Image (cartoon, rainbow, N blue to C red):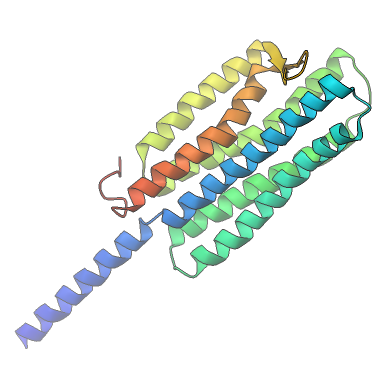
Length: 230
């Protein structure tokens, strides 16, 4: 009888250990973040190509408009495809933590993009200081939810590194946003357009930051989060 109880307890301990390791396996969600970075990277290449054509062939070239609109469409469609594909994959693994992260990021990326689109459509035409300020606030609609999602990712994965890096970026971003410093952007083929450093930092976050985050989680997933659970 005692032997049976001991075996049962051992089985329960083993099941708990397997479940715990499964919940810490972020391999699939890691690829989701890498996918976000790649989508934004391709969009950035299209954007730079549009700047190049504009600087060499002029604003009237139809490719400038096509690439400009295509960049927005690519990001929006890419977010939806990534969310649907990875949510289905992770749903099948019963990994509640990864599933929760995918849901948060899906809402943040798709929702903020829709809100940003509606916000820009509601803004009146003009070029005065008030409208310029309102136009800059569009950036906050996109980046603040991302910062929130990054903090949630750090909390859900119990990785202090993600939380600390997010906090550092948050401080840096708001310093850049308030400073309103602008530099030439998209200079290939001619003179670039002035763009705030805060906006450029967001692009870096959504490309390099997402890829690095995905790689970090993927490396940690090899040990099911045990060795890199910092």
